[in-house]
Length: 488
Image (tube, rainbow, N blue to C red; front, side, top):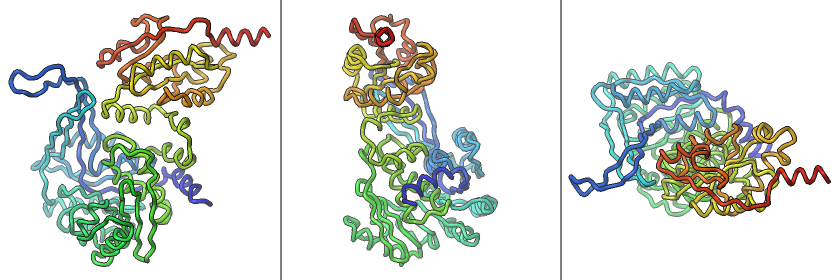
């Protein structure tokens, strides 16, 4: 079996994996709005808030990645007795494949990072947190919570963000507990003293962290290997997987094996959270019997996907399977996305300050009228999404004899056009659900409609966007073309 086949087999069995994550969990909050004026009280912008979103951060991003990969996740950690802590608990427990044991601390707030976004720019980040080691009682409670999970899990992840859960000798006790149960431990480390992770199966520092922990330069393949070997020999750690951003990864094992993996990323927009993706993917691979080298190879592909997204994103199982199936995929095919993945891409574009446009249709037997609509649509935005009716949707709208071409054939033709940046297939009769998910900046439709007749126009306008009516090319119709073919 080739390595690619092994990876795909691993992902298809992900729902059988049970993985425990222990560490510093946070709540990441995004507050979106618009800026129309400067405050009269001080020379600062006034943000008119339109919506808010919250997601798990810190060690919670490891959990998010485990769940999006299809695994079952357990989490043990600490939150405050506050609204943010209750929100963290709700986010952890809303997925049927996740369970959490949270210690409540009335003396410290839940770590909360609030980002204020306007005009696709981050204007301010406000952090609310209090760090420090666990009390002796909290440490005992944490060990008891972890011990309860050891009977079912296959791998334990320690996600150290330096907020206190893994400070002192907590990590040492947790690793000893796992080793006694013959459970591998993967550590995403923090700080300069890796001896506190003694006995860990694998640590996953980035280049900067490895250099600081080893007090050695890490600017070449040879220096990375030397620093990793130093950590293995002096800190009692079995293996090191060093993530190296645009240079890929390097795995160094206790037995002396060295594996250099070139980056899989086509474009790098944001490396924040990529380490969490690497840890989660490695944990999944090891829990299902893959070797360290195979796990690192799979994690490298996953990291290549997630760094092309914005913020602390996660990688989805179908994305990873598609990447493995089509590691040489052409750019046209890569433009065809499912709704959830498309949403993350839209957020990424908008945070870059790019305007996103959306037009939709059946596009059955592409003709010059379609091309004109697409060209006009592309002129109204920086990135253009085409919403495409599925085969079932076209059949309901056009009749049993349509479409002439399948949805994938139509999507492939559309995605080969230079003006099209993304194609999203939707199964409903209208694109309303897709528009609600993506919230583009510009909605484009043909001028045979009025703005009040355009599906989603009110939604887009209420969200600060606009509607553009494109001029139609006379004399072109798929229906007429089909009728001519039938008559002939």
